[in-house]
Image 1 (cartoon, one colour):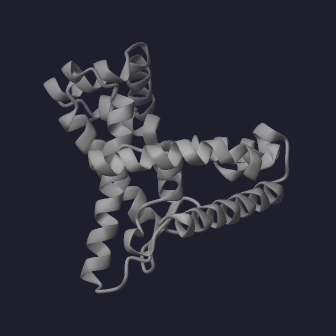
Image 2 (cartoon, rainbow, N blue to C red):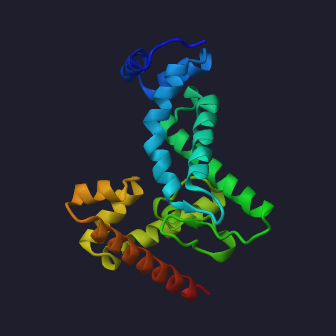
Image 3 (spheres, helix red, strand yellow):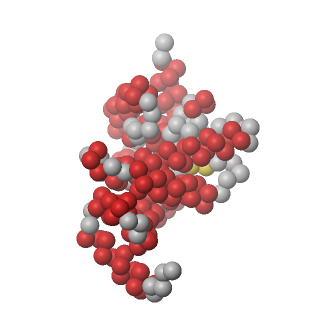
Length: 221
């Protein structure tokens, strides 16, 4: 039974700040520690919320997607191997993303409805890959098979070349902050722009990228 007061627990959690995430997770794996787990959860909560914000599934609550992200984080703490020479942050982001996507695919199969999930810049890139995100193409997220990843990298390189001409200076800044997981409020503060201006910029970005992808695909033989 845990009889520690909230202040005691907070103090214990603060002690983990002196360690790297990899070291904290190693402690977790050797002997489960509530404070260590709470520390990791608090540290990655904003990332999970930002990730959940980029997904939408008809009939699902945003909190459900956040919960799936938390499950992904737990799996990351369980399965992380320090000897693989991969940072825990990178591994956790991968596990969180995979868990959310798996949950979305499972939910849509169970409901016998089309995969109409909206990801990142709100629309799937291709109708038969509706959990594939514009964001994933832009940042080349490593959740695909090697062959698909190679194609994604090609898309990323091609899009990167065109982004400067496609987007205004403000739009490039907004997109960069958005992909870092910043909220509307955080972007508004960072760029000293009203939230409405940020929202308008994201809508323009979405439209421009969608048009670019559509035109590019139409040009393919």
